[in-house]
Length: 383
Ligand SMILES: NC(=O)c1ccc[n+]([C@@H]2O[C@H](COP(=O)([O-])OP(=O)(O)OC[C@H]3O[C@@H](n4cnc5c(N)ncnc54)[C@H](O)[C@@H]3O)[C@@H](O)[C@H]2O)c1
Image 1 (tube, rainbow, N blue to C red):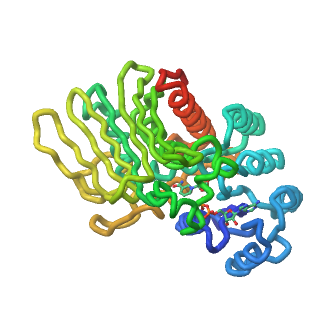
Image 2 (cartoon, helix red, strand yellow):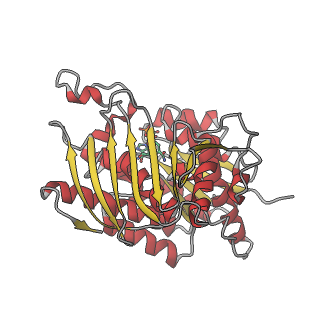
């Protein structure tokens, strides 16, 4: 019978946002099973989540340190842990599990400080452990198709990039009367103690940075930014001018106060021979315009998609996929890689196609550069 991995989760109690998405995404794959957790620092929520997922009571832990030690000591201990807590805990939890010899999948932004991210990357390398960071949008089939098209030269040499990630869920923070209103669990994002030096750039801006790097391979050399906090402790809006390592320029915008936008991640890559545009609200489609040709809307699952990445889809064309499948595609490759490592085999390039701790480190560097630049009056900051 095929081997099945065991995994545990820190964070992700029943009323949390992203932990549940991780569990559902992993459940697309029969090769991993949830067996342990420290789902909340609130005891009742922790116990309730363990019960809902039929976790043995001795594997529902009151704190993550106890969990790492106990799971590492069990012959049937977890193979990997998913960290889905607010940002301020990522570093300490990831370090604890790496030290215990357990593979890690962690939410973004990876951690608060560049030095912490470097330390985690070095530790994962030293211990030869897999470390995934869930920049989940790169799991969409059509973003993978776009990456392949760019690598194959379909849009020629890249000349310009434009990306945005815009939302409006923090519009109330512009208004003193409503500011801080506890409209959902996610308000910790506006508090530096839990979020770090940035809210908007860390929370959603990092997705743009990672996506453009994923699609094009270009790395940011330097950037100049403005941020707006509108009297709040952290940024709710940011604009960035980018210069990549190959001299190409780009522009990014992220906002949580852009009325009418929900999770508007949009990336546009312009080349000498055409352009590609992808939008997370319509993840199954890719707009491709060949030079001097009419714009085409390519659809996931259709026979004319010849790129190998087209096979990542789970459903026939016309049946919308989305965030769950994007996450599931990230996890499919992480699970394959861990299984290969356990078997002493080398993972294939396709299996290694998932965001790692190095992407997490790049994200933390990006956040620090944006905030530094904005604070210094939009000066250019090298990454
Ligand atoms: N990749 C993505 O697309 C994506 C989307 C949403 C959120 N995120 C990231 O996921 C993380 C969590 O975000 P969220 O919106 O799910 O937050 P949330 O507030 O909804 O959930 C946080 C969970 O962590 C638990 N928790 C807090 N302290 C804990 C502790 N000491 N031990 C164990 N559990 C603890 C809480 O009880 C809760 O269950 C953040 O870093 C966020 O940036 C990523």
